[in-house]
Length: 384
Image (tube, rainbow, N blue to C red):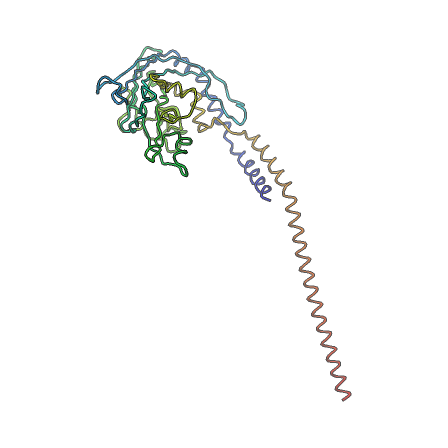
């Protein structure tokens, strides 16, 4: 009965929703971005030159590795274009109707000094909290096809820090190490996080100069809760103080440029893997990926339209086909419950009729016996 009801309801809903299906509009919007990308947007990005300067406060590093208490370190690197494939689509219609294109983005990475002990036998001192963690900022310089230069700067981002998380019970020490990927110390679960990647979006202004592309409240496809107003950067490209940066590439990070990861290799007790053994080698630096991509990139548009599912949904015809199939199967499964309900009604009616018949017979019997008693009384009285 449950399967019957669920299938009938699901089939009816699918058929009804097929008449308000918006896959065609989403595909048309995406394909238009692909055509514009192929026409000139990709070539404009490819013809640009990009470099950045990363600056971090080395004095905040643990284990006294810096020569001066106020020292800072920086590195300047060129970024290179790449057409490496993007994350594959999970389209329900196997990408039917979606145009193909060649991706393009600028990538690089910056290697930073390790925050691990110099010797594996040295004690693993706790890292600073997020508020006092060492930070890094990026100063991008971009030259467009027409020769104009643009500059945009990010806020400082924490490089690595220790975060105390709520322990999970029972056996919090084991769950801290195995589930939360942290270190159990002083009856607290300490989890180390570090900067993994910085990704920013850029687009061109009316003069053809590159600038940061921020998500604003006017962005119709921005995820709910992530559409904070972000004003245009100033002449240096640095957003106003106190305003959340929304020119990143990942909706799961609320479109913030930095993304972070848990460092499950840090600490005396850690998972055993070749990657951990490599980063735990004394003096081994860790790297932060840097990515710059165009706001007109079709992949980012697909992320917008599908809310990062990369699935444009079923077509109306497919929805109706699935809906009719579920409706037919549900109705077939409903035959047995309907017949059982009919038999129950028939049995109930028959029991009611039998009860009425017995009541009538009882009433007639009583009446006949009453008449017989009256006749006997009359006969007895006459004889007397």
